[in-house]
Length: 65
Image (cartoon, rainbow, N blue to C red):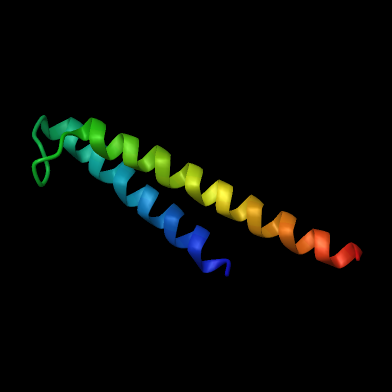
C-alpha cells in the first residue's frame, strides 16, 4: 500500500518539472499554463501526505488492540 503515496509524489515531481519548464519557456504545455502544473504539483503532494498519514494512523491503532 505504500506504492500509492510514492506514485503521487512521483507525479508531483513531474508536474513541478513541467511547471518549471513551462515558466522558463513562457509557453503553454498541452494547452495548460505553468500555474496549472504548479497547482497539480501541490495538490498531488498534499494527497500523498494525507494518504500516508491515514494509512499509518490506521495501522498503529490496530497494533495497540
